[in-house]
Structure formats: structure tokens, C-alpha cells
Image (cartoon, rainbow, N blue to C red; front, side):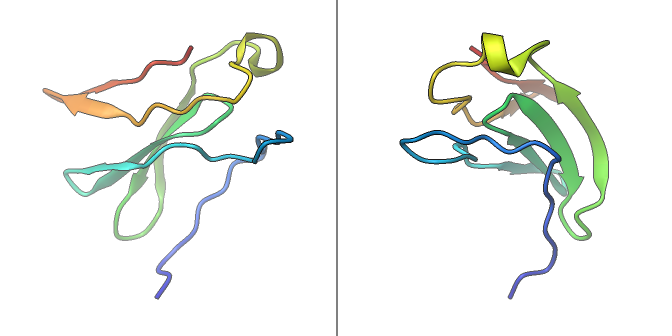
Length: 85
């Protein structure tokens, strides 16, 4: 049963398959996800409410990898670590 859904305004499209390409990380009641366009989001696990988001690329169209971002976020000591390209 779907409890909530979150979507960003931009969508990654590619001839070999659209995004997203990562597995969200769940820690301390939050869902941390890296979109294929490089948008990092942190959502409340129970409600889906957005806590914060960060663009990891200044210009995803020119800086993104051919197949998009595909690394799942890692959380260590309260810090979110991603590899945006």
C-alpha cells in the first residue's frame, strides 16, 4: 500500500531508460534520495514531507553523466555523502 509519493519538477530522460537510478537510504526516520539529475532530497519517512533538498550540480544538462546520477546516499555520523559525478 502506497503511503505517500514525492516527485521533483524535473525528470531525467534517456534513450536507455529514465530515472531515478538509485536506492533511497532510510535512516533515523528519514528517506534520503539522489535523483538522476543530481537533486538530493531528505523526506520524512512517515509523511513524505520534504525536510530539505540540495542541487549537487550547478547545471545538470552540461555537468551530468550520460546515464545520470546513480550512487545511493551514504549517511555517516549525521552527514550525507554522495558522488555527483
